[in-house]
Figure 1 (spheres, rainbow, N blue to C red):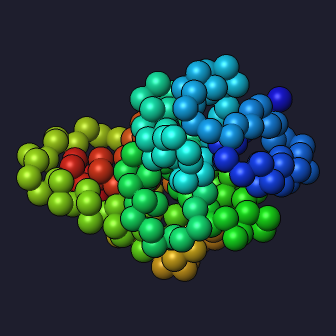
Figure 2: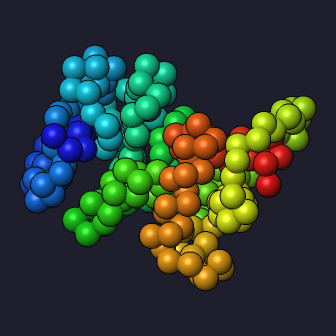
Amino acid sequence: MGLRIAIFDDNKNIRESISMLLNTEPDFTLVGSFGHVLDCVSDVRESKPDVVLMDIEMPGMTGIEAVKAIKKEFPQVQILMQTVFEDDDRVFDSICAGASGYILKNFLNTKLVDAIRELQYGGSPMSPSVARKVLNKMQSVSSVIMPEEAPDYHLTPREKEVLGCLVNGQSYKMIAAELFISYETVRSHVKKIYEKLHVASLTEVVAKAINQRIV
């Protein structure tokens, strides 16, 4: 059936526009379209998505609260936030809550498919500025917690270089330029890093790398 996707957005027009866009991708399957998140856990349980597109601004219960609820019950589900302003603190809060990335609503038509693909291959669509906020948050937490002893994750030297760049808040394009490799190669390395570290989001990658002093 391909990649299963569910939408949570209170704007019917946006839900319909996203549905039409997803239908142009033969390996994407829309399994749910919901106008609120009050029943998000049961909605996800019934629709069984691989990826959830979540609006930050939702009635009755915020998208951030919904992320926490969904990730608690279904940690394997990837959540992509939809927002109007990328420097909004709520974007940062949603990443800390468990979202794997975000996309600006102004660019849904042009960048949504690429963002979903990035999630599919183990990436986290996120600007360097927000990644830096996540990094600073993780560093402040790790400074008051005794670091864990790092097991051997069998990372290759190149994977450690890529991981170090992620910890520094660099985007895939920035990593590719610094290491003189292609964007696709970066994405492949990141996917391997996620698998070896047993994590599902950039936040978890940064936290584990810092707390266990992997790089």
